[in-house]
Amino acid sequence: MSITSHMAHFGSALLDFVYPPHCPTCQAWQAPDDRLPLCRACTQSLQTTSPHRCPRCSAPIDALAVKGKSCPNCDHWQKILFTEALVLTDFVGVAADAIHHLKFAGCKQIGSFLGHQMGANPDLAQKLGGLDLLVPVPLHAARQRERGFNQAEEIAKGVGDVLGIPLDTGCVRRILPTRQQARLHVTERAANMAGAFIAPRAPRGTPSSIGLMDDVLTTGATMSACAAALRTKSSARIIALAVASPFRQVGDTLR
Ligand SMILES: [Zn+2]
Ligand SMILES: [Zn+2]
Image (cartoon, rainbow, N blue to C red; front, side, top):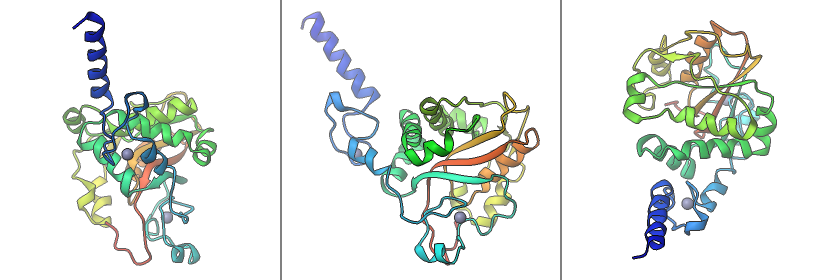
């Protein structure tokens, strides 16, 4: 084997490592020149969402909930610590699979890719463009060590990259190793998150608007607890941002 073919072989092995040849969410094979963290069809599906969204929490909701102006997702929000929540898509299919790969299979590059998709969405870009700062919801130090990165920070990097918004990763800290929210009922989620975050210092650059970034927005318990900590050091308008939110129907028992 010549040196050049060795190098070509090494190059393609490296590419396979960075971007696997099969799309992680649909398993479609991707040609080497065409490789992205997700294939084109899956990427495209991230830009589609339910026709009805709650104007307050952005959750995909059924038409009945829109009519009654009552959202089963955010009706229980006691204190609005953030003025608005903006979400790219529904937490199903490709988005749910991609987030699962990001968090539990170590596919770190999917994080900034999802952030890029948020920044590239015209509706979101318009609303996010005016933000002064992005603050990713932090993980507890032990969880971050175990995962090797914070998925919310990776997503925020992607959004910040596209829209030119700086990141601050040191103004909130998670001090309690909370239980997995996914297994808890809505009332347990808020109790589980109480006192989970502190703000060791004010956000950088005295921002007047902050985008608080997480991967999934479910009941808003994590975002509320994190926003409450931020509030102790900043009077900025806080908008909750997430890649996806689960679909809600009237009468849903929230989990
Ligand atoms: Zn795919
Ligand atoms: Zn809502």
